[in-house]
Image (tube, rainbow, N blue to C red; front, side, top):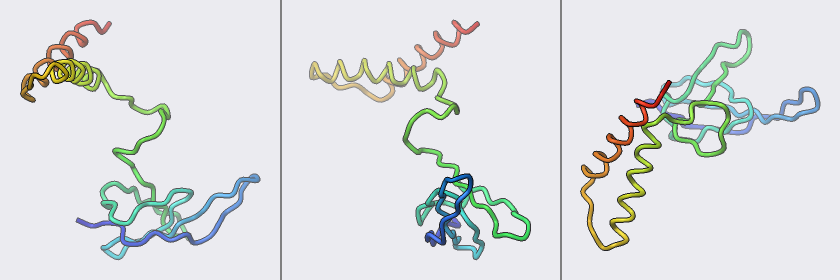
Length: 123
């Protein structure tokens, strides 16, 4: 699997009074480019990056952070699947707090039940 092997700050770029750091990115397959404002950690799979041609300039590299934390930015917040699993986890925790053990299959069964119920309520 091809990965990011280097990420170094190359320079700052100022536009409209805002300064943005530009990072030079190198991949294990020899490709490279620049990331505007975002460091891409060494070891990041190349499959998580979008490389765009930028004419006469270095290619633009953007990181599609699949599991990044942080606040909601208008993207997909998760569907009923994540809610259903969270509710099922809450039930499992209640059982565990009472000293009982719960098989993972039981938790996923509850999640499936919640999910199916929530999907039927969509209009």
